Length: 118
Image 1 (cartoon, rainbow, N blue to C red):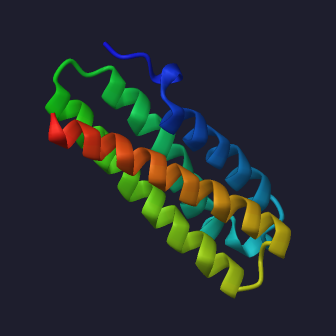
Image 2: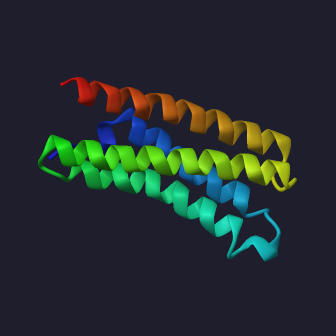
């Protein structure tokens, strides 16, 4: 069993989740069951899948959960861009969140690539 708390990808994903919750608090109330819910679900999915993957015995399963986490992260990146086009987050909040998502994508993608090579 792997320790998820030692992974930089997990730390970043956790930070992204906290940022998304803070950013979406200010979204219009009519989005509570729409974009707010979708973004939060996608954000929570990223670190959750990393944790679940770490709990798996086989490397194939571990890799599969990391790939699912990466897919959720890409989904979130799109949703954040959509929310910006709709005018929901402030520019500074958007930039901070997008930068953190991009950094997380890079780190998680590097982890996935390294596992595929081995």
